[in-house]
Amino acid sequence: MALVDAGKNRILDLGIAAAITHLSLHTNAVGSGSGSEVTGGSPAYARKAASWAAAATGAAALNTQPVFDVPATTVARVGFFSAVTGGTYCGDAELTDEVFAAQGTYTITSGSIAITG
Image (cartoon, rainbow, N blue to C red; front, top):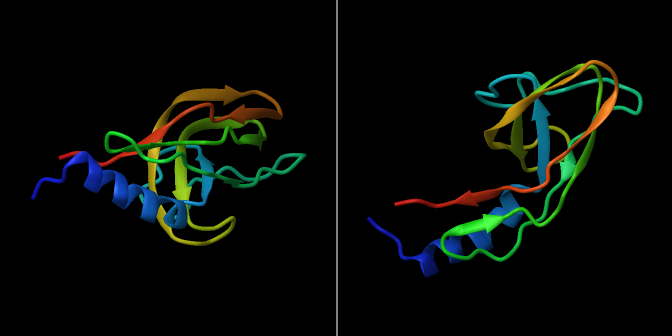
């Protein structure tokens, strides 16, 4: 089955905002659930809310630029969840590894989710 962009956009617009409401940071491959999610720090790390722009050409772009408080660690992946804690794990994406020698902040400046095929 192949979907045209209009179909892909409709699926993304109706589903993504409800399914992926929060982003998380991880120290290595997520795999499933919230494995290796960053913890600790002062101020403490927490998942951040995400919003999505209207889909176009089969992709929905991140509409926010969440800023995470991060303790000394390495940030390697961003996770997609349905809640600020717990919730449904919806997937993840690789980031360029960033090593934090001390407490700092990490900002997700762009990103999108696409339907291919």
